Image 1 (cartoon, helix red, strand yellow):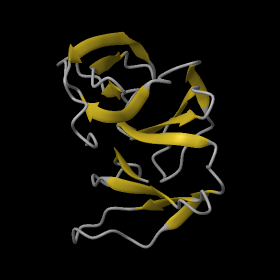
Image 2 (spheres, one colour):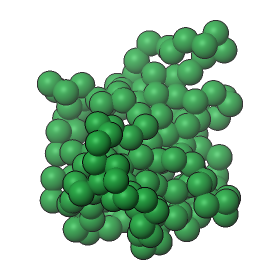
Image 3 (cartoon, one colour):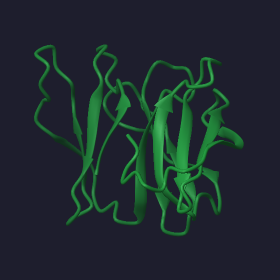
Image 4 (tube, helix red, strand yellow):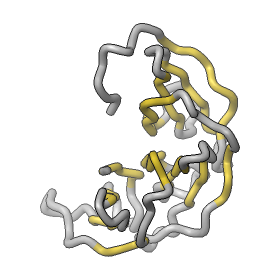
Length: 155
């Protein structure tokens, strides 16, 4: 699993989060001025309980990227970035969320309100937008397209 929540270290460069499939360990790879990634730094052990980890962008307007994680019970959690390459403690955003989603992507601000949004695809190929509320959560979903079942992944 690879995702980019944006700038986690307040250096103006996007960073990368990677999860090892075998161990569940989560690592930060900082973006550098040379266009390369720095050596990995371990952030968490054994995140196997999460089926999806989403780089969501800046969900609360503090200029630092944030993560979302969906567990196997379909609870969606938020981890605010600290600006130091780490994350604060998790907060539950939704219970029973997205059981039918086979893809979820942090897409930035697609509705033009200045807040980070999510796009999700269900198993029938319907795309939904959850508009960010600017406080670390999202409004209810809005259908934005159909016929996307033929695409293997969303980026």
